[in-house]
Structure formats: structure tokens, C-alpha cells
Image (tube, rainbow, N blue to C red; front, side, top):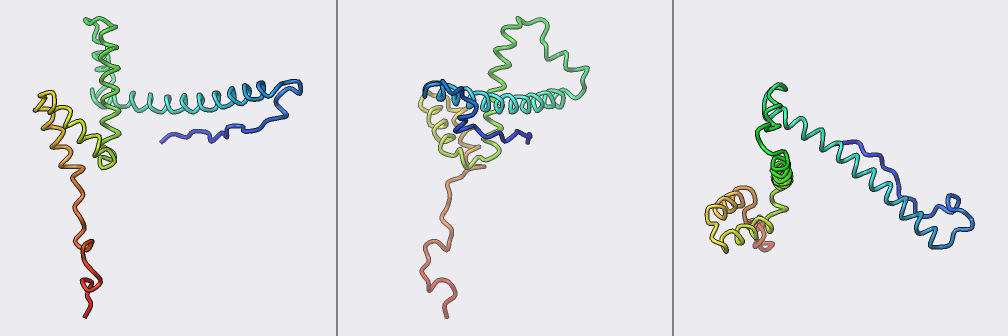
Length: 154
């Protein structure tokens, strides 16, 4: 993954707070420190994701000279950005679910039911197929219902 500095969030920094600061000043300073550390973590993670996106862009077109096609010069840049934002969100979500589909079983089932409820039967079927392939209902292990005599007692 990425290397993110493990900077602890300061919990008590009396020496860094001016001696005339009230408790509110200390709380404000702690909030500022927390904000700075968490903001730095988000930025570091963002840089990591940006690198993955850049590599993904190249890998999906094959050669750097083909990347210019991703600019879509004949389309309104605002529309292209809206499409990009939506596709990126969908792709990141799908990637997360595909890495551990069993953790998202309930969510996948709920989506399948939501599709069916509004008459999107093709999409419900697609979601159901993926659900059955990667996150089937967990069947009980054959040994789960056995008593002690079922384990090779002679």
C-alpha cells in the first residue's frame, strides 16, 4: 500500500500551549493538531490513490500516446468531469467489494432487492448472480450438527 507516517495525535501538549491560554485555547489547539494530522493522512492516501488511478488510466489504454483520447476534446469538459467523477466512484466501490465480497453480502442482497422492487429485473439478476458466485449463503459445515458420537467414536 502506501507508507503513511504514523504521527500520533497529541492528547496533551501543555508546553506548546501558551501559559495564558484558557481551557478553550487548549481544546482549540488540540482540535487544530488533530485536524492537521488527519488532514495529512487524507492527503497522503489521496496521493497514493492518484498514483493508482494514473497507472490504471495507462493500463486501460495501453500506451501513453493514447491517453489524449481520455480528454474527449469534442465534449463539454464539465460533462466529462461529471462522468469521470461518477465512474471513479463506481469503480472504487466495485473494487472494494470485489476484494472481500462476503463482507458486503447484506449490502449486495439489499441492492438486488431494491433493483427488483423498482422493476430493474436485469440489474437485479446481475447483482444476484454476483452474489451467488462470490458471497453465497453460508451453508452449515457438515460437522456443525453432529454430537460427540459423530466424531469417530468407537
